[in-house]
Length: 395
Image (cartoon, rainbow, N blue to C red; front, side):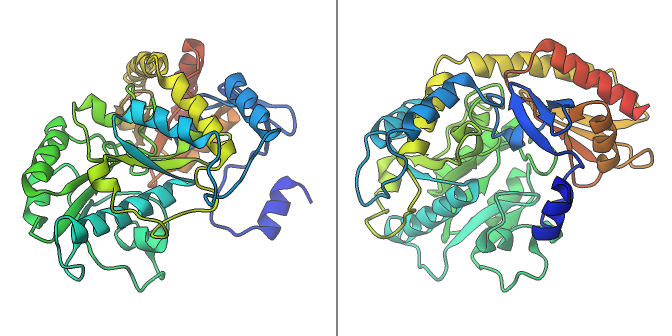
């Protein structure tokens, strides 16, 4: 059997991949088992912001591989402290709690918000509630899908975890109506990635900050996809001039080399976490901490953030030239775009397959929307190729 047949025969069918088997990658480009090259315009859903096989990240990972990879948190390791210090410098928050995956980081933020609500805000634990947004995507754990309105992710996995209220994304009054004396947090994506790179009105994010401060509610920003350069700033919240109480980070924090996630907040929130109340065998392991430390160092001077904005402007200008009868609308935020295709012409899957035939990798979301997130190391020529391939595919 070939590679695809093996995966389909022995693996769970929880994904519907494009029919390509990738073997190697460098920068913004990947090569399949037959030697065909493709421009990667998905970048591991923003986990590969710095491209494939970035030499700095590989060198740091290889160096650490020969020293120490895992201790568990039963002991300190010499990579964790420097990693946490750099996280504090980048986020402006006093403390961070490292985990592995984005969903784990979201779960961590939810637990901290609930315990903070009980122990600091003095909310009855049986009355505590967290406000979330419709169209959200924060992972696929049992708790997280309990407040999702994506039927594919949610259907038949009940009973569902209580304690969540769903507001209309981008509608500040809808959030305000749901806040009561038992509300402990608002969890939101500054830009909704899985929904198709949906950008809210600027006054929604600033208004959310004001609402949370007014009602003593934690503002939790899920920056797993939007953070660490993708948005044309260190965080998407920066583009709105807002600082949340809690950052939720993941994906690009591990540079596409190892899974690394974290939540960052100040000590007046983080202090509710005590020994034994939360943890992870692999969270904060020396290999992950070393790679994460390198990632944060690469972001320190702002060059990747500026590059994302520059290439994003080029992409936005290019998308504006696509045939109007084929593209219903498009949204660009940093180097991140959602393109809504006329469903009468083709589906998002059809467009993804047409791009694949032209040597470009992208993926649909929610039927007729294509999501684009090239690595921040892509060239101007790469973006031009992407736009031209889109035009050819649509016509």
